[in-house]
Length: 318
Image (cartoon, rainbow, N blue to C red):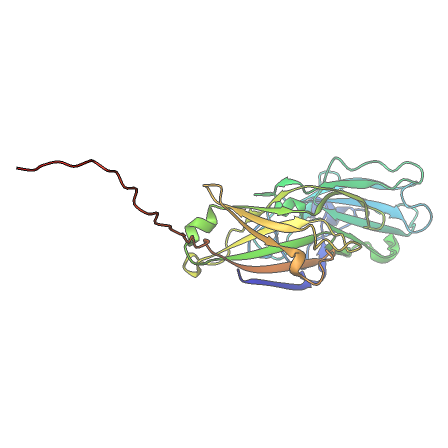
């Protein structure tokens, strides 16, 4: 079986800006913080393109510029929604827009994607956290598992009111992209019907919203990869599978990590990472793997045994 693996950054960093409420409300009330997208979120997970999708949701926090970030949070987990998609820029609106502090206090804005109502509330020294679980079938779900996080510098109403607030976000997880080619005995249609499972990676964690770090990375479990839409043409006899995986850069997972392709008849085609020098999964990186899947040739050893003699006795033929 042909094996090849490439390592590289997944789209570097993504720049985001977003807008609250309608334009008529923004223009009539300078206290409303204005946001609008100005650049794309690269490595779009829902397809082979890099565009926002209508209905994408982000969560926004307004926090003081100094001191205990979440002990005196001004705005907590405010939901903003993309009103249009299909492009590298989008406008996000909210029914509960964020306002600049009346006392002109310096603040930071924290943004994460995708929005979740399950974010935990900060208590004492415990950070507000976004729970993450990558285990199970990621078919149709990889977009929502592409966790992004970013934070602005110090901003003030007197300086920044009337201008869009720009936030740079980056990928907090890693991605596997598997390009499978139909080899001897297989066709494109065979590959498209395979179930592809990533085995041996950790799947659960919490994202600390104050600094974007991952905590409590744990739970090794299987991940079923998504078949990418809008990818390689059928005539290329290739299928692209993709999955979001948990960063685990501190641990070399090559001895435990493998990918299994299972066809409708239960036949298994397996790739194992143990032949690599190392596999340290890192946030923001896409791990590309090109494989040619082949049916195994079946050979037969046939032994011809000697004849067994059956004596039928003497007789006459007339």
